[in-house]
Length: 130
Image (cartoon, rainbow, N blue to C red; front, top):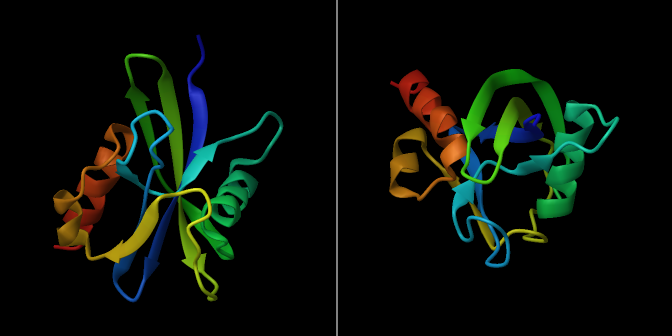
């Protein structure tokens, strides 16, 4: 079975990183993650991340480029996460399809229960901030 293709946004603004908390009624409820979601058939992953940011947080952003690629096996499925460095274009964020969001410093990330597939991104962000 092929892995599920997912795109995720690494949005850094004024030294802080955007994370969002998953809803209660989804797999891995209430864990924190980098915003994003599955790439639809025939959808460009860059377009998917912009769509997901709009759907989840009413966020307008610009994709700067690929940040990292993560392959992760969950018990129920395997995911291939294409993470993109994104720039917030301004405006007020609204929690539309997430429980909440916050902007955190890289060294604060270990204080949040992060979705397992996003853990390598957290490790990289922390290392780069040293």
